[in-house]
Image (cartoon, rainbow, N blue to C red; front, side):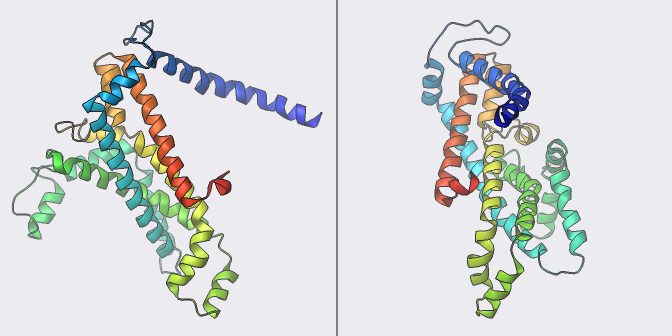
Length: 289
């Protein structure tokens, strides 16, 4: 009786999720199987034609390459940098509270503001980065960081890393609070060095929150849109056109709603594959569940 009443209490939530997530997902799947145009969802049924066309398309393969490169590079650096900063801020340093508060600033900034600020920093005429590197004699002429195909994606990745590594650092800090002091002290008494303590005591204790952080970041980077759109709009020469940018262009710029929906679903599948591969490597599926 009690279990049945519990399910009854969950029914409004389930209905809400079904309306907000389930129905739009079903519609997206259906549209992806047709040649529907923007504003006219009644297209001709194509089956898997849109998916086959995308997989054969050089533009899709390029967007996929850009997305995976951006995702892997930013997530790996963010995880390493966030882990390092989290470990440092867990030490009994002077002004540790102030440093932790300052760490929130990049993460708290809206992505739009962050992207616009970095556009100014990268400006080829008066940007702070060019001025700094020129004064340090690293470069001899100002460069267009967002205007060169070989540099644009790296520049955007740096902006994304600056904004998001505090998220990983804060999760690391939260995980470190749950590491029993007795384990650390026992490791010290046993003569374990700093690396041995980190590898045998600290890392296993914070691996689950780190895995959750990595999964969330992979999802965010696979569907990245706003920071790229604001900084380069997918240029120059499509060098920074991610899958999400391609979905937007196909669905809203060119009106190919069916093809755009198919690319969107393929990006979801890619996220699932990457997350599954990471979880398999980390061997933490039971812990996450």
